[in-house]
Image (cartoon, rainbow, N blue to C red; front, side, top):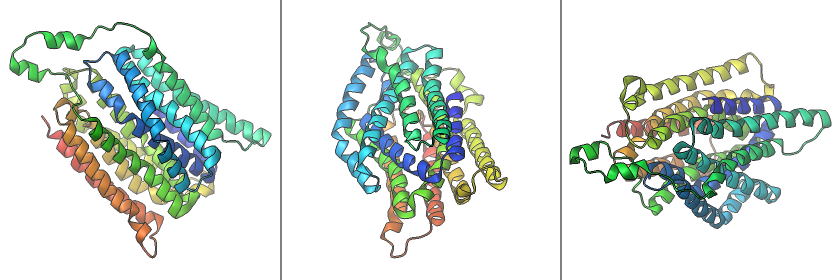
Length: 399
């Protein structure tokens, strides 16, 4: 919660100290880097958590090598995305490459520390990178206003933060023999009913299916930024992405602080079965937090705490609150398919939802007279919310 609170503060800092044009361009580059990184990982961090029969450090080292090779192979795809967004190929390509590789290392480091690190290490690997990025952005903004410097402050601060997070992957290269309690537990003969009940989670999906699932998610996440940039310009993109960055932290909190931890534990615990930890309650509580954040943004605009150039955010508050709130409910159950041997069905369901979202997103491009950005976002958010709620209901019924 502290780590994501810092990232929310970083997003609010962008609203206060940077122009919509700067935020929009940074959002495009960071999203392309995120797309590149996500596709290269191919959901390896989840597999690293679920497949606990493989020693953590060895699995992390193998995951980095495989992901790095995929990232190099995807270099032309990143170049095409930069060209489609109409950004200058240089130095945007360099920034995107550095952002992608450092963020890829940070994502793998988080899964590694969940399995092989102490509680303090698990907290530090999440808190220090956003704290570094926020501090660097603040210093850069103050320095820029004092020295009239117009350098890429936002990109540099994000890159330094990701590099700090990627450094936590270094222990994966230390040779050590790790005891694996799951292998020992599985080797003991138990009654068939007990074995099924306490079987650790696993990820039986093929590499092709994992790549297809990742491709669908990454393409959609990047397409919404690139399409907005192309159809409505950098300023409109800045309004949408700044608010999406603030509200999007809540689904990420639920997924990382609940679903990933549940997978890292290896099997259901008594705590995870209590009413207080019911995924529905967790999802609804996160949905309520999204609503509070949306209302806070509305109050900030109404009270004119932000620069008047940010008033365009008004039209995005309601649809993004609905979309990200529904994402919280879906994220609360995202661990269950891996615990019920339904990971393949989960991937196919997510791919189908991504195709429906893409249809709504790209529909205005073919129209003779494009619709307004507000109407476009309302339609996209409604379709996304209905799909995510249906996905959450399906996962809740898995046993």
